[in-house]
Length: 94
Image (cartoon, rainbow, N blue to C red):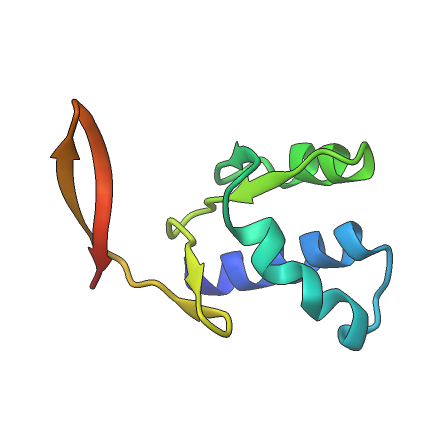
């Protein structure tokens, strides 16, 4: 799952930046991996490429539930939630 998502993120970052140069597209990886944007699930890479080409923000969730933090580190596979005001809020990642 993680390998699939890593390859997808690189491809989506290339599309978002309009470049195949890692020095350019590396700046877009966190942007395509995290909210805000339209949620992208496994098997929706074509849809994501079209949305990016149209200038629409995406939130790539992928096969492994991608969420990147800090300098591009994975937030972890598990989220600890609290319910506040009837809504789930992420407390931490594990």
